Image 1 (cartoon, rainbow, N blue to C red):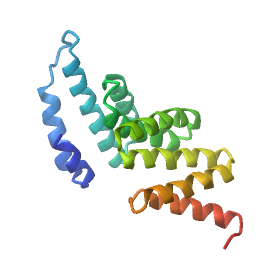
Image 2: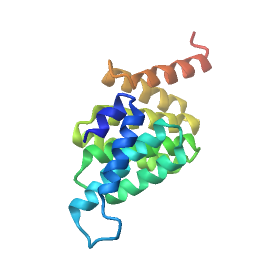
Image 3: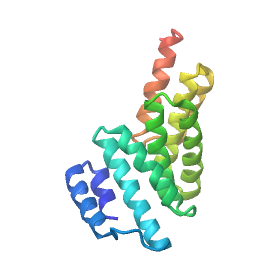
Length: 174
């Protein structure tokens, strides 16, 4: 739990040390199935995925995000919203739009269910970006406008402003 505030505050080296210590506490051999241990390993993978993305390693980030989604309990919508948004962004950056869209819809739903507005808005904005890449510019613009309306003053809304401005410029709406 303490790794997340460190990650979100940008104290990546401190978070990395803490996560390495937590990973060293996990059993080294495959134990019998245990829901608590599985959830713990899912949380470690989720935090590790965020850390790898923040450190500029999208491949490792995506790998850990997929592992986290496989391990996290279905009822853990808070973690699943963060991991799904993280994985969706990794797929988007890799040009894998179909996979990004699928994962981002799951992250959007998990964010709505858990009340995690940051993850929900992130997923929503990146779904708009998927639409833009596909040439669905009017639909993307609506997603960006809705995100700005719903999300201000959240910092992630900056992306929606940027993307909407790019579309308006493309349309010569100066």
